[in-house]
Image (cartoon, rainbow, N blue to C red; front, side):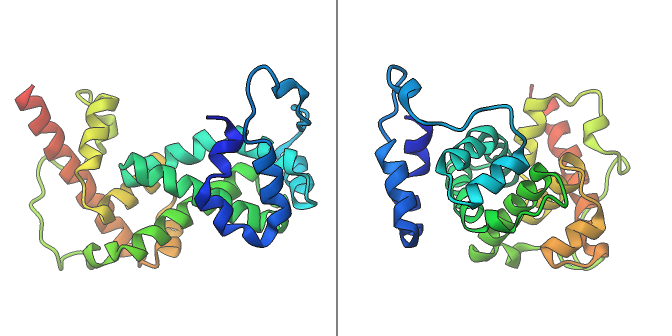
Length: 228
């Protein structure tokens, strides 16, 4: 399936029908194949994301498709890390690019485009969690949800027994609240103040959830090692 086909599936078309001219442009190019793609009018590579964003905001659909080609894998990977669910990650990737299409005119270049898109992706996933009432499972303030602490608080990423596959399996078994904070802090590099702001938590809750996520991961990784 071509890039354009992925963008302009039924879900995307229905949500951007207010921009029917845009939908028609994508639909007209939905049959891109290796033998005819060179004949398509596409945005030249080599320009900056900021330039492509400005051109896309002015209505140049080839520029928007170039942005999609550059960033869709990164967006999908982040969605997958946060949800641990490939179908959900695919749907959320589409939702992110729908939002990007609608909001790209608000990008002013005050931060890197990748940073701006990253934040948009995180917000979209968190909104998805809220709609599923995942926040009902959110851990309360530290001390209100007792949990056995074992073997200290070391970050499992630094443990010599951890490999990427085992860690991903363990992350997928975390409660949603724990997993989100762990991915944002230990994988994506967000500070607790940022996590608290985007998740509507206190800083203390963010720290507590991270601590407990690491403890759970340590236990899960130990169990995996014992079984193997």
